[in-house]
Length: 360
Length: 202
Image (cartoon, rainbow over all chains, first blue to last red; front, side, top):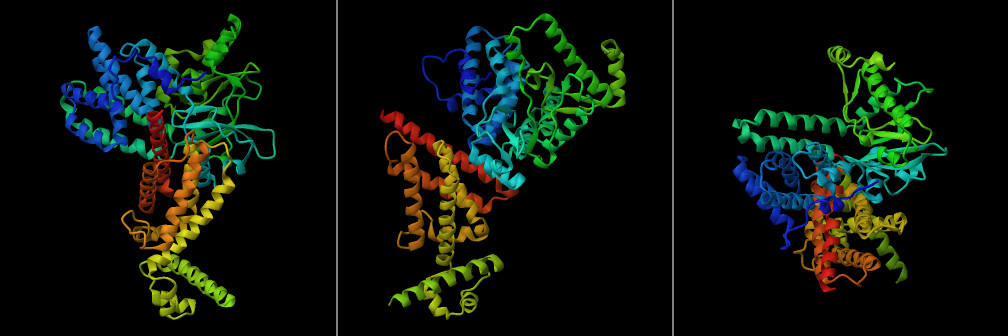
């Protein structure tokens, strides 16, 4: 189950006859933003400066797409799609921006009413895209993080990643001298700082918009994305959440949280047990019986309720890519990068509206 | 005759080793040729017989580090790398060996490897440049479907590589991680320029 940036592009309506340079198209798009009451002068200047700014442009796209796809006639719609396609094409070509593109993609995908359905569908599958860091890059990152190359730390470290995390990629390996299979997640270099810089710049860029009616809403949206990304770039935080969550389930239960190997983990490398299983899409393609589906449905609900009520943890990114249907019939929960600690007040509110007892 | 040549080589190596320690200890700017000569146990005049300037000596140290990097590259290369990765590995192994000398890389590279330096300016610099570019041409040759890179491609590479060196020498990011990103993207850019040239001539 994978989709790459080309599939994403292909899922959009075909280009006009005249081939258009993506750079030109994005530039035009940004110029068009002028009529949308955004600080186009500043954005244009920044655009010329290069890649970091392209990411800001991507963030603008989120807003722009939301505001401009509704209420247009077909011709305008086509034109907008062409611009969007060009922008995605351009951004997709910058491999290190892919983390940001994927994030923007995920956000766009959650607004199916404003992007073409096919496109939203392709964006939704971006969680599984093969990532771009090659082994020689990984070796450098591992030396910085853990003091040795991956093949010195692990046995059978697979040079090809088997999954893309939104801000990194995941490789299979074995704990040295054992049969224990692990998943090793590695973060792109400098992504955490880049995101912080981007948001600072973006806030400055958005400042002239503060009088518009949509300002509060927009600021909240970006603030939320920023908080989410801040959580996701800190793997030590994720390790803490994983450890806290695994305390919620006994060994004899049907829900599994992968164990963390703290001595093989840092802020930017996270080593956990590797779970043998498939994602939702592949699970459903095996055409499981209704009773089986119900059982898994119940496990998904149970896992979420147990974490919330017993451990005050909310898995805030519960998309299908984070559930694993294990070969032995158990449910695996992965990716605790985006987890929120709940307050007693939250719990009370939830208890009132979603009675946990009915599940037990 | 033979002995004299061996002695000469020994003295030369002694000067380079002393300089390496002194530059690391005192910094390139603070280390004087007088310090260097006295620590190596030779006259200042003798020092200049071997190396015309402090920068030339710095270049010698850099050349040795890059030679070590080349050996490291050969040891780490798996053979299954893409061209982008292969070039990245070639450059990064050099940078890793250059790390102890990063603080004085800028003045040395500026005088000995600058694209504006005349080729007669520094023999070692010229040798390093030629060897490096021959290696790059060989790496490209292994991967490319259509022979050797053109002189334009090679000059483009050299401009990118010097740009990475310059950036790295000033990189203030934690553990110079930004250089990894710049190097990776520079190599991708270079390879994509090869690809687009190739498709234009097809």
